[in-house]
Image (cartoon, rainbow, N blue to C red; front, side):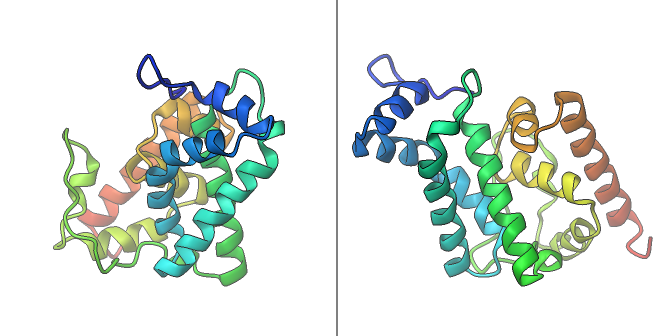
Length: 189
């Protein structure tokens, strides 16, 4: 999903080229376009808001430092999310907080969704069981679900972010959701 907003707005590719040429406002625009979804993903990898901000900043610092290595033909959003996921993985390894990834957030309630989706399962009555189920998922399934339901990425973007095929991304999402459903039906399993 190459960000090509209105007819008067530059594409991510054009902004990246300008940023590489030293135009700070172009990089600021890249941040503006992607900051909200990156923030939501970082919040899933962090126990507290301060740590989430650290991951968010680390992500965009790495994006800036690595912009010259962004591959021609690759869209920017999945590349940024791959950096965010890697920052989250590094954080989890350093802090050993992976199992506490889905604890309740103070500002988290029922998540509204424009269309029907598995996010509707984040009801306060089942959120504890859901988090417990998420804690048992293999890393790729957990990351695919984070990117899908918190980062709101498409399957194509998830595949690019996780460096796997689209069919593998679909499989990670489907198997993760199936395991979660099974956990919610029988918590002892």
